[in-house]
Length: 53
Image (cartoon, rainbow, N blue to C red):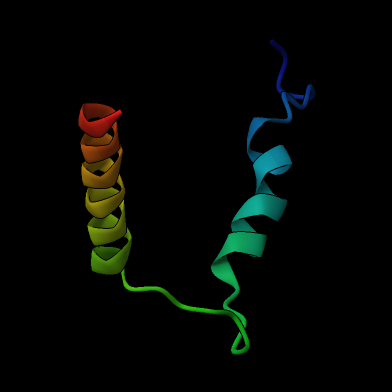
């Protein structure tokens, strides 16, 4: 590949990096522990319903 060709790898992801780096003050923030706890609780509910049904 010659030095004049642009592969587009880094430049194509630059917009995503800029988008995800910006924080919105109005955005809803959820603690990661809450997400994990909800996932575990959901899994337990599915297992209980599987045993009952």
